[in-house]
Image (cartoon, rainbow, N blue to C red):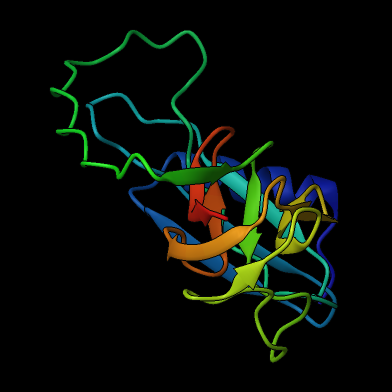
Amino acid sequence: MQLDHDQLRQLLALLGDSDIQELKLEGDDFRLEVRRNLPSPAPAPATVTMVQPPAGPPPLAPVPAAPIGAAPGPSAPPPPAASVRSDLQAVTAPMVGTFYRSSAPGEAPFVEVGSRISAGQPVCILEAMKLMNELECEFSGEVVEILVENGTPVEFGQVLMRIKAA
């Protein structure tokens, strides 16, 4: 099955006029997922992803973003801060991407809770724009918590794991 740009535009226009919230279309050499979130009466823009068949970790569906220039809605109070032990150091995401615990599906994770690590040792991979970036720990210690599930999108500065420094 082939889908050219004109057909894609027509499909998106038809979906924009419908009440369909999610559409998945797969061909031999592509996969198209369209999702939209309609929290208010005005329809939000659709999010579209076209992906070639994966060679590495499985691709994730995109998370719909708020429209640019949209007025912020009523904000909920921030969740209470979890108590964090003062003897733990956080390993944070240096970029937005997808968190992977191992270098390839089916391989052993870089670290587990209880693992002893050295400064410069890889602890995970962050995939950004189809580039796999190994994240190395900046200090030695023992992994106490891994806060992110494998294959989960992460934000810049998000705490990925906590290490008890040696």
